[in-house]
Length: 298
Image (cartoon, rainbow, N blue to C red; front, side):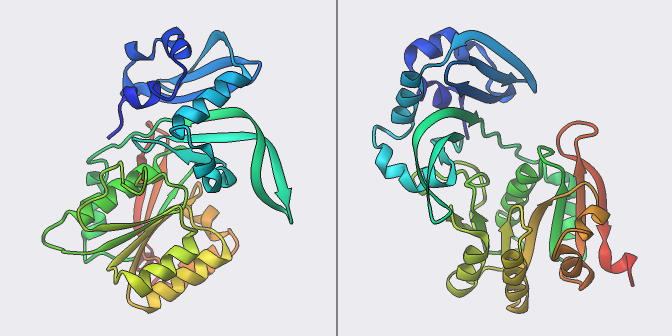
């Protein structure tokens, strides 16, 4: 579980004092952005606050040192992915001048922009869909959501709900490529993902799913933001091995997702039966629909 102190301790003391973060409610803090030569920006209660504080290169470097415990080189692999995860599961996105070799980002030699995304668990948010997910037995489930509408938060709590269910006794393998779900810090999940969950932290989705099948004997594999052809092939393999898949995907409706490359065939071929559609209409995590694809198209 995160707290405001985890954000404060990666900021230079002078900056933390000016922002007066200790006076803010952690639950309402969403994001902190720093851009060299520009004003510090805070997203608080989903509203932008711009401070009359200019960011310097030294400030950015100091933050990276604090976030990496003064071992920036130890985080080189994370930098290649464009972010590092800190205690509490908070993620610091980085950008600037990238070093490219063979069309692959090798590192950044000038990091001049940071975005701290504050991790928030919403324990119990999956309760509103759990009857649907459990009803008739847990089936392959796809959560459809536009960006920023709570799909990762819902997936995290659904994993916790299933993993902690002592009637089910199901082992879950969580493929956390972007380190957002479990929020592992030094390999330890910072978020509550349940007692029977194993995490593939920072692992590509397709490779993680295949490794989980071979190594961890999961009853369920949970994966965030599927979409590529490799993801689809891995999902088909896992289902053929008898594993249940719970996944999320960016989308605004079932029809929108069906029109995405590879996804229409995956759904219409009966790989995913239970569909949960989210929106932000009444705030993040608004459940618009829970539908059984097989029943609607039988």
